[in-house]
Length: 471
Picture 1 (cartoon, rainbow, N blue to C red):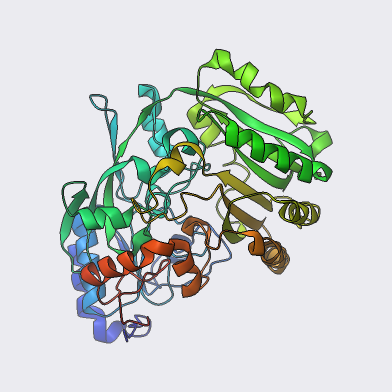
Picture 2: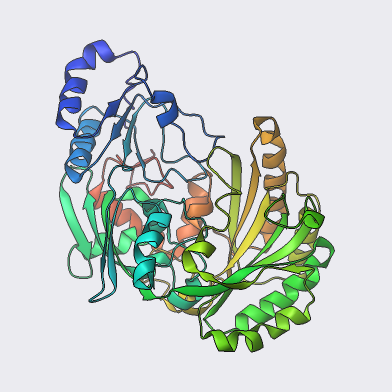
């Protein structure tokens, strides 16, 4: 069993090694007594309050290699942080070493083949900013402050999934630092087993310092939310399932139960609960009105759907969900919206505990469903929806309230689920849930993990344990 080396309280015996590491890094090495430690250790979810022994603020690949070697040689608990958005706080750890990639930022757009090279520390809003002037977009999530690395390695579900697939379906190549400190490039021709593993297998196999994506021609979208009173949840969910399943790939819409917290929405909607659908259409604009006619026929009480730049849709919810909130997430995949499931959504959607707490169901139909179940580790290509329940509030006083609602909501839905969950939506929920979420691909992931990280250096994640290891 690995012993986690506790850096705190050991600076006297480790000082030469720490000073050696500090001298090797171009970026900063931050220790608990250093200025800025308290602010630097924060992650997106303020419910996570961990205190690492040191944070290596990497600015290039060499920094990452030095940090990985240091962590391995001193048997430290190692966490890897990109954007810091992970709900379970799996980009940070107590006592050990955090390898922070936020200084590794660069974006290069190649219009010859519409590809984009992105640094391991970039955020999706930065990618959108770089690609939009060229009329291009890379499929990502729905919040632009999310890190490229974490979202990509877990799969990448978002507004463009039905048309262009998941983010991993658009990943062409990656550069990685492995657990032994070596550097490799992975793609369809080089290190193909690793390339397969990182397309959904998370950060288990190494640290990705660079991604190369296929981008798609996209300048503007027609999108935005429609709202119905929460009392209509069962009716709207039943209709939505039939509608989105038959809709062309160009139309995406995720369904939600939520409260309108305040601006920018009209005052008469504030603090009321709704069943909502957030739409994204990337087809020919002159065909949208006819396609959207059935939505209008359902008489939403409010809609804010119109043409906008794609980055505007991607960042639409950023202002409502800044860093520093209390978050608790639970998730599952679903195949159908049967009557019992719809009844539970009405029940728990009617008692949302705080204005920002919400439930989302993202469709996995269209292009995302046409990738083979064994082609990437993302095993639920046959599921219709990736669902997530989020308890959210700025006040720590409400942490128990949002957590209890979220857990109870999840427990009511889980019997009707497909069994596993999208790993980017999971908290730290144990090995059984991880196994269920990779299904038939889990054993292949274990085999690759055993080859490239046999001592499980990279285990602060939704961990795929090497064979015969219990930690």
